[in-house]
Amino acid sequence: MIKMLLVWLCGGMWFLSNLVLRPKKLSCDRIYRMELRRGNFDEAAYKGSKRQELMISSDYGYSLSCEIIEPETNYIYYKKSNEQTENEAVNETFIPVAILCHGFSQGKYRSLIYAEIFLKLGFRVIIYDHRNHGLSGKAFTSMGYYEKYDLKKLVDWSYDTYGPNCKIVTHGVSMGAATALLHLGIDKRVVCTIADCSYSDLKELLKHQVNYYHMPRLLIPLESFITQIRAGFWYGDVSPISVIKRVDTPVLFIHGKRDKYVPTEMTRKMYKSKRNNKALYLVARAAHAQSCETNKEGYEKRVRAFVRKYMEKHLP
Image (tube, rainbow, N blue to C red):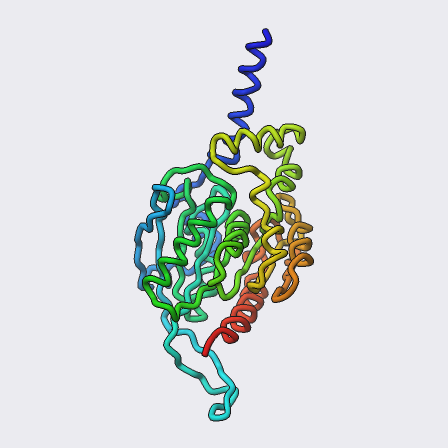
């Protein structure tokens, strides 16, 4: 009887760990159709743009499915100097790149709504599928722990491809936002980051979501142990707020005020924890990962202003 109970418990723990490590995912085609139906991107403009699909090898034995979308016009900025007026456009040799990170169970086409914002600014945009998502290679989903190294790989690729004058901005939503924030702890080459509805700490998120995961709170430490055995990381290793406290890279924090999945308070705490180079945009009536759809004009305005502010500080 005791042996059967232990077998049942271990099986249950294994099943519960799969909710994080092997989530149910939407297909690329379904995500594309959903985004199109919602009116989240201009299909004619997207199909008419210059695009390149490629696979980039990760450091963990799988490939990342990526798509590069070229802008119609180059990035233009304004520079003050003794010879130039404030409103005179300046052309310099640099290449702005925006790398967009999608959320849990989603895929790269979920990023098209945000890609349009950066394309209008003249950025090359890279959208990609996280590991274990879309067309990328199969590996455990790690809620940002290994994904941050994949993001670094894309930054490496951008510098190798476009040269040392490459200027990179990262943008992420939910798990993608956590990935972008965690990446700042291992890579200082990013000009600025936009973190939309990120969780501050995975353990705290799971405590909040016990009903969603059907997981008693007391089992979270055991699940973390199982995850460490299976995938090589602890839940405590996924803590964007710990990174934010010690990095200087500018971050625009965005969160919907009606987010029940990832509490808005998590973003407020991260904003307060960051010492400098920060901005906060809380979107009224927006649920989880719905801030841009709820107020696209306001979202685009905040992102454009933030990106321009810090891009131009880093340019010659």
